[in-house]
Image 1: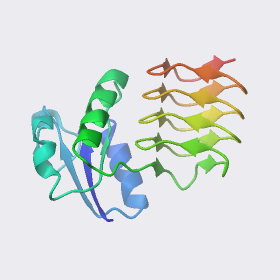
Image 2: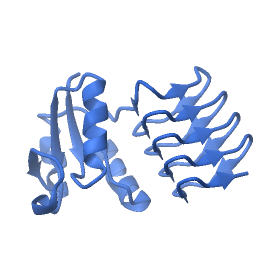
Image 3: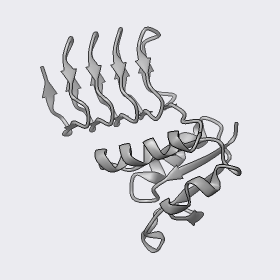
Image 4: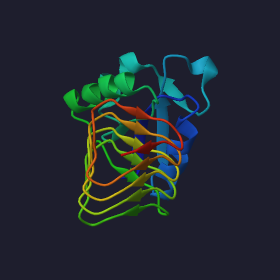
Length: 167
């Protein structure tokens, strides 16, 4: 599996593209509704084309920062039968007891401790620290350097700002 279709070509997408490349993806393309403002290429279509690219790309992920929009397109990918990967940066630490759902993007230096559950299409940004026995709902975005303390439950679609402490 070396091909990956990324939904979104905005400012977050180059980070996802780089991470995918580190993980061995070599054929990476993008769908975006504003290709003239894209940060990545090739933009081969718009989000209206998701279903039509299923025969060329069997694996796809959403790289959009807006939680609701990310979940909308994540569901469309599921409905179209795409394989939705989990992308974990090589410098991140993820406990072997953690449960990571499809569509999660875990960036550099993030830590996911023991018995953590990450819901679908959650983004852990650079240096996010998730302590033990935490449950993070689907579609969350934990920004750079944020800390989620042990035994906390983060509701779906929550955005945790950079350098925040959730306890």
